[in-house]
Length: 256
Image 1 (cartoon, rainbow, N blue to C red):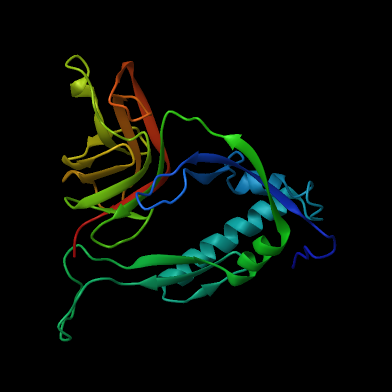
Image 2: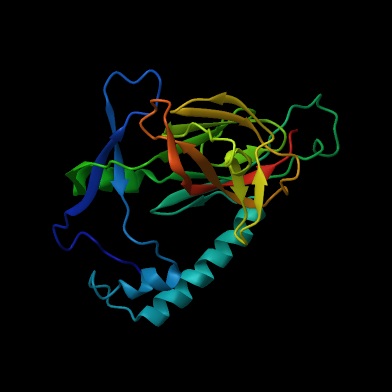
């Protein structure tokens, strides 16, 4: 079965808002942030089939996608490089070696590496229009997080190592009554909180923290900043605490 999206002159549209620049070297005041549609799982994707005139029932799409993803899962684990119209997937192994080893370094394990497929990049370039929708005056946002050991962005956090978080309205502060509740926390899907071990850089646009030692390798963590500072960065404290959550998760890993 193949799907042909060229039968119509399809033009997509996404909405973006201006957000305050978060990189220190930025020359202008704003970046653009995509206004995302609701998140879709496989069933949600299948339910959209009728909207886009896919002549296959949602049940068949779900069954096909589920079986296909499970097959990709096992083939990638067997070392195959997978090429699809949406992404390319291959396995990689980190660490430094002398050349005579017979096992991986402690804490190192194979990792899946994803890359957006060239066909999708071309499609987006040719078919997607952008609608500008003013300035997003959020109380703070997390733009990305960089694992300083591996330089991976929005992918991993290395336990007991530095993690740099960039965004806007990030500075952690609080009065005496609230100081024990503030900080940067790593949250599991079950809602368990782990506080950052130390904050080395604490600025409105950048936090650099040491990831806690009790993160569980292979576990997925969302970032949560709890602070009483104003997002305007003027040094004033708010009456109440505010929270800033990442819209991505990080997989915990140990250092090689």
